[in-house]
Amino acid sequence: RKEVEQDPGPFNVPEGATVAFNCTYSNSASQSFFWYRQDCRKEPKLLMSVYSSGNEDGRFTAQLNRASQYISLLIRDSKLSDSATYLCVVSSYSGAGSYQLTFGKGTKLSVIP
Amino acid sequence: NAGVTQTPKFQVLKTGQSMTLQCAQDMNHEYMSWYRQDPGMGLRLIHYSVGAGITDQGEVPNGYNVSRSTTEDFPLRLLSAAPSQTSVYFCASSRTHTSAVTDTQYFGPGTRLTVL
Figure 1 (cartoon, chains in turn green, red):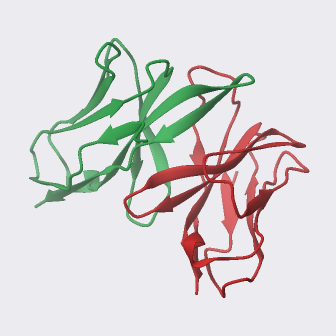
Figure 2 (cartoon, rainbow over the protein chains, first blue to last red):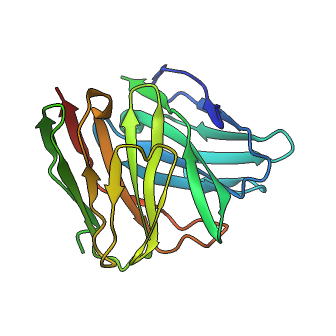
């Protein structure tokens, strides 16, 4: 059962490039959506939440399409420091007033000088 | 404010041994959880707790026990280690579990476990 699917990657892009990651989720009742970043051999950290209206944080833009159950992340003007694995994460109601996160497998990005 | 801490960072066990992975947070977070991360599998939820004295199973609970006697601590116990439990284990915490816009999950640095 694959609840959150991401582009397999890896993505190798030159500095300054624009790169887009895509993600689909299977649970139509999912409530909230996020992108996490995980550096090599480190813990995941929240990059940004994803809202239906789309949201931007500097060079990063996240989009959500609830009808298509599709999430995207766009990185403009890639920097070497953007090299990491990007995890698509979906929050769904799990009963008894609780929400749980489901993680995609991640897409590895390498930004090349 | 140390955030979420985990010990040990690395551990090698023999099949059948038991051990406890420690996790602590100093943010007074209500919700704590344990994940394992395997190559090509993504993070999978093992157990979680919505408050002191309350725990529940996640997606892959077999072979693991947890307890939550205090708000701060959430240890994960491997009852009888098996090679299939070789993985990276992450503990995480968040302020609550009841928000549809889930509070940010803060992860510890992870424990790399090898079972021979």
